[in-house]
Length: 385
Image (cartoon, rainbow, N blue to C red; front, side):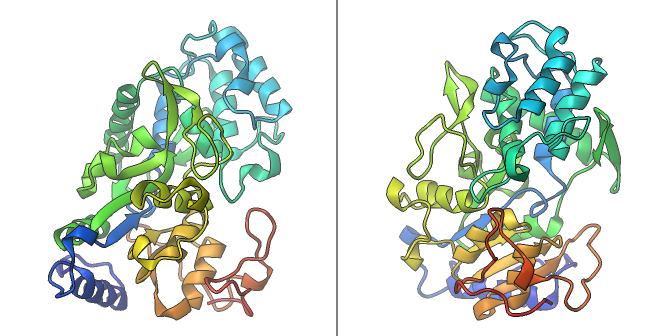
């Protein structure tokens, strides 16, 4: 069971998780080692306080590892960059380095500022939109994808070393620390939640197959996944295509998308796609839809954000939400369809408890402008909680 000496849990959540372990774990009379129950965790702000993708991106800017694109054409890095974004990057970074050479972003303040603003704020430094439609759909987040794309030209092992360096730098900083990179203020520390480490390790001890599904780059999260006992081969992040052992600007395909396309990553419905593809081996035509076979879905899923909603809905027994006041996932957690949703405040620097009706669920929209719905496909009749 969960370690009783580790506090911070809402007691009802601890009790529900322990009951799941007893019913579905290795001590259960129905446990089948050939069909182990699956548990899936989001990484950033679910396992880890703050975001290792952000921390690693900042480390890349501070250490001059981003390469000038071929022909100095920023459109090659992402086909979704707006004309304003490409023009801003060209103006700021063109003279900084030859094509294919590292950009000196540690010393070239203008180039660093443009890259950071486009990644972190979604806008150029003069506030022009860097991405279309706010940069988010139900299968991708363009800025998240760009974090992987700007690793192009490097090997997976190089990126893993950057992630370890970024993790070690940030885990050593005090809780609450901030950093300013390229003029952008962002979190300057990370911590693995003791409670989630204990949960992941306890699930493994109970015979669960534990996976990580993250919208951070693959080689970033797999570099530190063993912090909670999950081996790198059970991490699914943004997976780039490789050429000659080097990362490219394209992504591996899922569903009916072929390798090289960039409109689907491990984000929102894309997380479901990759669970179906990698964990359950579904054919491409079936990967984007909810699996109709409950035995081919996770028993347990933990997440913190709307990007995790599809995989949270697919969990058959428990759905743990680490509360960050994200409206879609919070509406679902408070509505608690079939009494399977666990609402848990963050274990470090938790958000204030929401007031009654804080989330206007009836008026909320998904990234493509549709009314949000619960697992039964119904719109929410009232504000929550």
